[in-house]
Length: 215
Ligand SMILES: C[S@@+](CC[C@H](N)C(=O)[O-])C[C@H]1O[C@@H](n2cnc3c(N)ncnc32)[C@H](O)[C@@H]1O
Image (cartoon, rainbow, N blue to C red; front, side, top):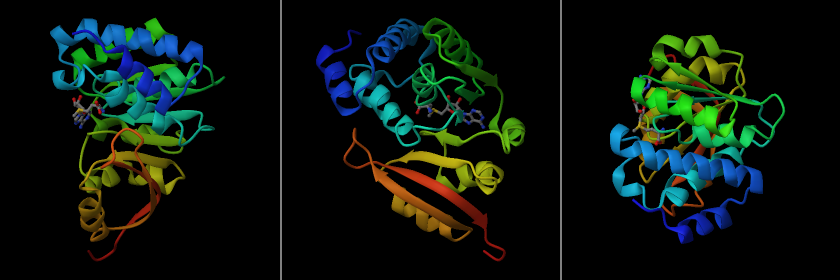
């Protein structure tokens, strides 16, 4: 699969980055293409416009918390948004992102791509429910893309959110329904930002979430 250069230009117009970050992102995209056939890291249909669908879609999340130093990405898959945020953090002294992913072949790719791009990334080959408690009080932002419905995300992240971590969850056209369902069980303090890559998508920014006593 050949990546379309006009897609790269469009993505970088939507979410501009420094020359150095662009070079690191290009390394990531090249490796993703190389590994995709064997490891099926992202949906094959999205590879032709990988820069917009995956890179810019992830960069817009990084831009929402420009001063955050320590990040956690859950269910990182082929590295979106986690590896892209990690690449941005390479220019941020002391920055680090932790990626939690249960699939070992995806973890092998994440470690390889992090080494190659020099991104400050730690990969945890684990199930979220087994390790999420280790991050309480230690991360500024938690992200999760295409991982689970909002009630499940809130359940995993409740201790993080209670202790001041910001949740950034990109969501598609069903966000309102997910918020309605979640509000049966949770009191949520949140806002949304429109996606720059998809007119039907928004990023949910969760400042706090408290479980209702009597759902
Ligand atoms: C649909 S993919 C999304 C990947 C990536 N975030 C993206 O947007 O391209 C979901 C990923 O979450 C991982 N995953 C699902 N449940 C998990 C769990 N409980 N613990 C760790 N990883 C999990 C899967 O292995 C898969 O790679």
